[in-house]
Image 1 (cartoon, rainbow over the protein chains, first blue to last red):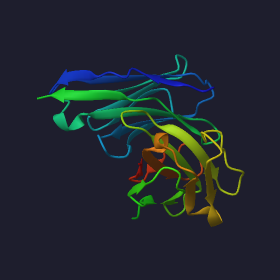
Image 2: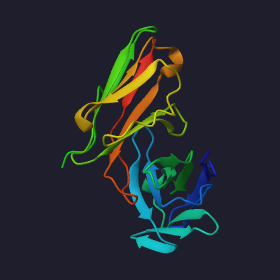
Image 3: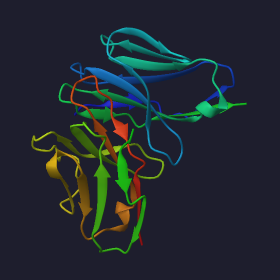
Length: 110
Length: 114
C-alpha cells in the first residue's frame, strides 16, 4: 500500500511569516510530486510540481524534494491571509497513479 | 481553454435511487480519475482510466459503484441504490500521459442523499 503522510494541522502562522508544510511518502519508486491548494468548498488546484532532488521556487512558494529521505515540503514565504487553505501533497508513480495525503490545514492570521 | 467539466454541480436524491455523474476531461488528456471527498476529509480514490487500458477500479467502495469512459473522453460514474453514506463531493480529474503530468480537477458534484 503506497502511503502519503501529512500533518493534518491546523497550522497557524502570522501574516508575513514563513509557513512550512511537510509530506512523507512510502514508495521509493515515486516519480513526481505535486502540491495542491484547496479552499473550503472548492476543488484542489495545482500550485507546485517537483521531480528532482533539491529546491524549486515559484514566486512565494518553494518546493523541496529529498528522495533519499522520501520527503517533500512546501514553503510559503510572506504568508498572506489568502493563503489560508488546506494543502494536499500528491505523489505519482510510474503508472500515472496518484496518491494524495489527507492535507494540512493552514491559517494565516492577519 | 476549457477545464475539466462536471455535471451536475449539485444532486439531491432519495435513498435507493440511482444517480449518474458526468465528467468531461480536458481535451487531449488521456488519463481520467474519480475521487470522493466527504466533508472535512481527504480525497478518496475511486477509479482511474488511462487511454484504452483496463481501468484501475481498486478504489470503488462497493459493487453499487461503477464507471465507464466512452471513446476515451467523457466518463460517467454511476451509483446504484444510493445510501446516505454516499453523500459527498465527487471530484473528477484528468491529466496528460506522462510521469510529470499533474492532475487538473473539475469543480465536483455535490451529492446529497436524503
